[in-house]
Image (cartoon, rainbow, N blue to C red; front, side, top):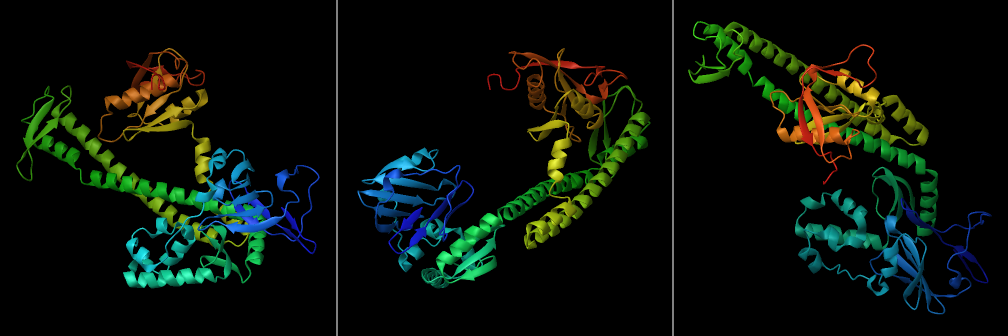
Amino acid sequence: MELSSTHETFFIKANVSTNWSCLSFPSGFHRARKNSIDLFDEIILQKIKSVRQFENERAFALELENDLSLIFKMHGNKSNVLLLKQNKIQQIFKNQLKTDFEIDIDRLDTTIEFGKGNFEKNISRLRPVYFTLGSVVFDFLEEQNFDLLSSDEKWGVFNKTIERLKQPAYFVTEYGERLILSLLPLGKISKEFADPITALNFFADKTVRDHAFYTEKRQAISKLEAQLKNSKNYLDKNKRKLQEIENDHHYQLWADLLMANLHFVKQGKDEVVLNNFYDEKPIAIKLKKELSPQKNAEVFYRKAKNRQIEIEKLKEGISRKQTQEVKWHSTIESIRQAQDLKHLREIVNLSGVAKTADAKEAVLPYREFEFKSYKIWVGKNAEANDKLTLKYSFKEDLWLHAKDVAGSHVLIKHQSGKKIPKEVVEYAARLAAFYSKRKNESLCPVAYTPKKFVRKRKGDPAGAVVVEREEVILVEPLGVNS
């Protein structure tokens, strides 16, 4: 927007894009020959009578002749420019923001009481009461251990900060992995200014030039922090599991009790009760009645050995994940210290960490669902079905497939020591039905069996398998009546 007098010309440039809103005041403007259009024709060549700053609001108005006014509403991703006549909105720049036509201009002014009484009354909820200050001011207060101060000390620091805002310096600073213009010294300061127009022009120009740098920096850190969050969940879950397994010695105990009491235990029973070695309390031991007591003991010894193997694998996985966490924290710090796009990309590429999640997602042959804490994997296509069933499964996993039609292989991942609940089987069956040729039918038969009963013959086409033993459940495909 160009403002001209007989002596000088002044430009206002308003960026009101979804991801960045900012005003700047360039010294000149060269209009593009293409993709350029006049807007708000009614105000062209109209005189500006006054400028109205709405109280405690990120908006101001240029009040013009003939009852016209132009409002710059700088509300983050909802920023817009509005044309009014007699205080009624006639046009808006971003037409997709339909609710802007309903704005009541007289309600944009908001009174906030900054006295000590109102401060003390709302000391536990300062952010919503003094909303106009924005998050940067409250972050600045937090850096001064604001929450640890007494009520009087808080008022002193708060009041001093408000006075500082009335006669500020202007800082272009990197804060929260983005560049901001701040009235307070916060974050990694790039430059300090005494003049707001100079500061704003520098900030706007640097933001545009460094857009890729700050965007990639923010995205890289966001990915790493997501991986750290997933890592924490993984460690918490596996540490609990490790503790449970390490404290569970019942297979070893059962085997020892059977071997010590072979002469009391008869073959053909599905349960025997024996006294514990240590406290003489009776223990019920479930048996396979087709096996001899000695063979049952061998089964328990094997399971105890497998438990030990599982313990070692869990410890290895936990150690590996903890090492990764250290590397990720170090990489995040290096990214934060990066000064330019070239240096940033070198850090990201050398670490290889930020791309790990995307790469893993791209190569996995299945979609993952979760129901009642059980992971359910659904093959993406015929080739992926083969990979899922042959390479990503264990014999204890439950395998499902819509009966007699083409569709995805589905696995319910086995959890040690747990029987898969019926409702989980039904949910997975509904997924198998949905990802099959029967997805639009009201009812679909779905075969299910432990994965150990599924095999592939040499020469069979992709996705084709032989099921040696199965049960069938009738379900509605997921999405039908739900």
